[in-house]
Length: 142
Image (tube, rainbow, N blue to C red):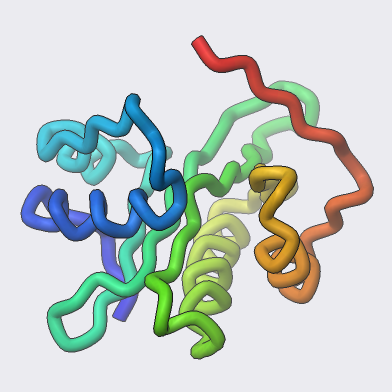
């Protein structure tokens, strides 16, 4: 089942995020921030739950722009599926859930960034219709 994360999911989200960025010294998951995201109509922290266990997560941010009239765009970040559950279409279901929402509000496009070294993830994103050759991503950490 896919649902929005709740404060009670904090520790399980930390476990998932550790799989994504195992050496992060800046990780700081807060219950209050999970609740803030839950109340925000343009930001979503989705989790995939099965038998009470969080197996996957995805963050979706809806961004307003002026270029395409009233059409916003979606940005997907921090998509992760627990090791041992990969290959069961959980990531696909999370992406489809985000895409369905974006279509429902007439988004112009959906974008995502992925670490340049995550080749298996890139193959997965391309199978799901994302084109890694049309843009080049840049990050500046502050």
